Amino acid sequence: MTSPFPTIANPLVLAGEGVRLRPVTLADVASVAAASSGDRASYGFTNVPHDERSARRYVENLVAERLSGTSYSFVIEDGRRHEVVGMTRYLTLRWWFAREAPDAVEIGGTWLAARAQRTGVNTAAKRLMLSHAFDEWGVARVDFKTDARNDQSRRALERLGASFEGVLHSWQPSARNDEQGLPRDSAMYAVVREHWPEVRARLDNRRY
Image 1 (cartoon, rainbow, N blue to C red):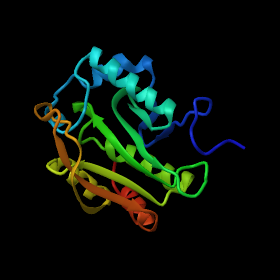
Image 2 (cartoon, rainbow, N blue to C red):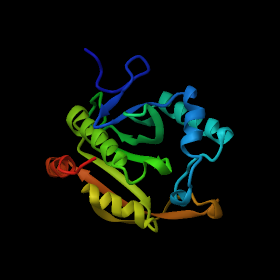
Image 3 (cartoon, one colour):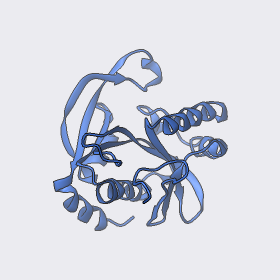
Image 4 (cartoon, helix red, strand yellow):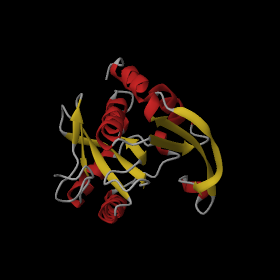
């Protein structure tokens, strides 16, 4: 029987609604750099590579995390144009009950090229990842966290249907360029298994 948890031999690819998510590889460095090369105004609170050199380091780290089981990163492809338009990942995977699949997971590390923002790509990608987490892995919850000052991200999570659970103060390093070495407050959101049918219906009623 094939394990429900993705491996190198059994990579996880999610596709639907004009969006395709596939595991990032070193062959994607140039495409990742190109996707992040447009208007960067929305990246103030997010770690996004700024050129091909930083994109290589970024992708190398994400591939290493996947190999170690720390996170599972995807490139987001526009299914119509077949081009990379951003990144996202599963992270903070937790196993509680000796299952092969995780019992809880976070979705994060998400950013989109300027041309893909406000197009429905993010909603479609989140729909795919939430569906896989709840319907295939059977997780109890999916977490989301963002810089507490990132109003754009917080509004997007609320539109998604995630519930606000509070602010964790000095929870992790800030991703702002002018705050290197400083902690940030993280606003925590989640979708739990009991609320997934309602969230799924909300997402399915939105046009991508």
